[in-house]
Image (cartoon, rainbow over the protein chains, first blue to last red):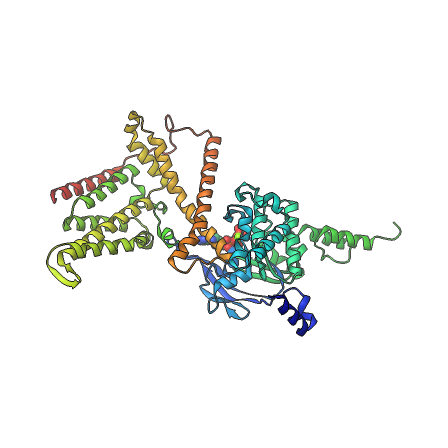
Length: 308
Length: 263
Ligand SMILES: Nc1ncnc2c1ncn2[C@@H]1O[C@H](COP(=O)(O)OP(=O)(O)OP(=O)(O)O)[C@@H](O)[C@H]1O
Ligand SMILES: [Mg+2]
């Protein structure tokens, strides 16, 4: 855009539109999706059964469920890496397998795979990170800028690791490189498959900070995780997948209230909440809906008898 | 990677059929004999007899037909070209003329060669599907052990071969993962052939690199368990010859004689 153009638009367009970050308007709707992996070895077994899910623009939700429940499979459907046997996936009302190209879709939904560190393919870290933006056809300056920003977001120093081979980094560092590779594309929606599995506390913090920030900027976040404590501290809506079916979809408060539900899906409520329950029974806190030790501490402080 | 996905060579399909239970040595010898016969003899009788043996083998293997026949898919072009070349270049009684005459003899020999090729592939597939790699290794090791006297590192060579077979599916899997990663980051893998080949380059390189890393890790793991080569190594499973093994060997020997006579 030339300087002139910018001035003109600022002049004519109401103020509201100018400064705000790009607002993604991506609604994802999964309708009655069923899928089975085909193999010559065995009869197909249904991995996803009649899954329906609506994800609003700018929403942040968690997908949890036991190992083998089909979380990864569902994520791969989102960007058309797998094709549903029956049912469909609509993005902004348009079936992704009809009409517009999957390539465009993949630029809008950034998918971070499970253990993405095994999928780095660049010769150097920087080269891997710029792969996405280059495919977007951006100018070299902007490509570079985005890559540096993304690496900064995941706390990697471009000068230090940029020219190194990804194979010579630690697993945790490689995970962050992979994350930066997707962030640098600045997609409207981020879908992350177990982004914190196997990371240390600092690595987990970095990833969570990135997620919060991306969410604040208006991006849709879909987070797959085994760590129920982590997701319940981070967000409100939880979808439980069990044996390829949506077992629960709603607010975390409702999920933890229903013991039978929890047991069936093999979910243990987070420690913080279990402690809060006990404290509530002892009359020390007012609610059991506490999902981190910081929240518990806050409540306790508030309820502490004045006499003490 | 449609080609690699259809190749089930090197993969084992568990079962306990007649073929699964054969001693790998007799199975290997029978299979090599069968292949040799199909190679040396051009006679229709041999083709029919080989086909019947193969059909019998497939029927008794307890394998789903799809698992065996899908191995043919990557070779369809080879069959087609073989057929075409024979049909067009064999002299004989012309049937049609497409600039070059297509002869009756050409059609027959093209068909024969394509069938022979597909039989060879099916035989190989049948063998690998019913033989766990470890049994194959044992069999090769035992059969070639006389060469150890001549200081041929039989055991090491066999180990290398079996490891490569073992790693093939892993590499295929890895290729799929890298491809998915690249697609997810806006790469386009379709388009013209040249563009597709170009897009393959950044994928193949990391595959090689990761294969080398894998090999290194494997070597380390083997060393960490104090692996030393073949001499004085005992094995967990002892190979034993049974009645069926003699039957299989007998059958293949008869077939060989038949093939030689019909030459
Ligand atoms: N490529 C594949 N071919 C055949 N079956 C598969 C394949 N990938 C996964 N499966 C099967 O599909 C089911 C669901 O797998 P999926 O990877 O989606 O589980 P998941 O919920 O992501 O598990 P985890 O939490 O362990 O990552 C499993 O039973 C698995 O065995
Ligand atoms: Mg998974």
